[in-house]
Length: 245
Image (cartoon, rainbow, N blue to C red):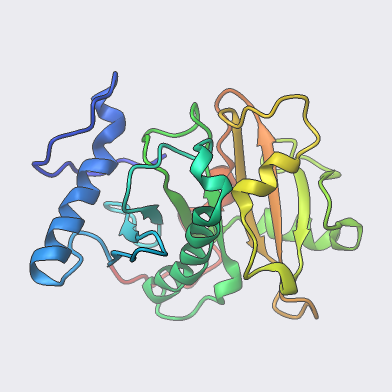
């Protein structure tokens, strides 16, 4: 979940204005970027161009490491049809690059491989602007993935054990496929009877630094309030205690 302070900017037409707070904050970042060249209150803003959609990176208020990456245009969430196209790959690569903001907040004392990504479902999120959560990964989750790593393949299979109480599907993303990967399109390949993604949530976690293939694991599950963000550790318990604000 994510709560941010609203800027004085009109919200989109919505049945629940509280789910547009992130969109309003984003408008403040865009206005500042266009008028001053700075990104505040975001950490960074890439306005994109005719061929590539823009992205913004924002730190969750009061949380020194929890960071989100979002489109600069209106994209409601992971269920949005446009994410099945090239834009989905753009946002994936922007999120990978933004992991360094979490590492920097920890003084560079955490390997980037220990920063995970997560996107929540409609019922598991508080905002209706796509935002990819970035933060440390729960140590128990990394340990479970390492323990079962030899059984995981490039096709969706059921993960052998629950993770933080959730039953996940998992697939590998090998290093050679990372650059062209689209996690939103990969959700369409899940062996479920419905193609409706509104109750789906996913997380992506890098393989161990000593793994010969520097790829990732993608995990997904379905539930009315699915939030794979639960695989992340916003306290960053695996990192040194000294955290920059």
